[in-house]
Amino acid sequence: MNLDVLRCPDCRGQLNPRATTLICANCGAAWPLREAIPVMYREPWVKGPDKLLRYFYDGVPRLHDPLVRYGLPLWQVGGTEDEIRQGYLRRLRLDALQPSAEPPRFLEVSVGSGASIGLVRNAAAAVPDMEYWGFDLSWGMMSLARERIRKSLQRPVSWVQGDAHALPFADDTFDRVLHVGGIGGFRDPALALAEMCRVAKPGAPIVVVDEQLDPNRPNGWWPRMWFRAVTFYDDRPHCPTEALPPGVTDVLEEQLSRFYYGLSFRAPA
Image (tube, rainbow, N blue to C red):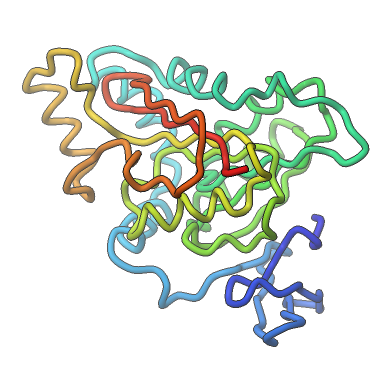
């Protein structure tokens, strides 16, 4: 793990490693290491839907993948997980990454069970040394992702546990940023989007995916019932274009399936 990339969530100061903690050189804050993974948030930050969803993901993480893979096509009456993932992968413009003296860096905010990691790396095969950073609030889901990587013998991932509203990374760090399936439950989507832009390099592609019922197709009682069930935590599930920070460019909203939108844009120059 390249610790030079990390910053203190309190003041964005640089961090000095100790045996079981990272110490901020600026404010002195201590951030613990759990199984050698930085834990970069404070419990009082986790409120409302963030806390509710973390209980679910920490409690039954192994239910997530089967529900998405087998339940989603049934609930939304068509459309598969693979189709959704391929839909947003192309917006990351991974084919445009080229080998360079400094390996490109990829950040996945809310990495979940790690289902996107292998797909991203395959699509970015031209840059095999790309640094992949997996970030999540749920220790249960991140543990599942780590197990997936170990079993598949994929290249190592740098893991960080934290809050998407205070990303513990330096400004202008990542060449690509991806977030799938969580922002609708964030307490402040605008702040999370601003943080993604802050840590992305100027002009870097950013892709955000979450639930929105497709307004351009007929939706009977069955998909409407299931959509409401899977978005119970969100009063108005929708693509948060209104929450994008000033200066973003190439904004594109598209419907990836009956239940999911894809929002792609570039970080401010």
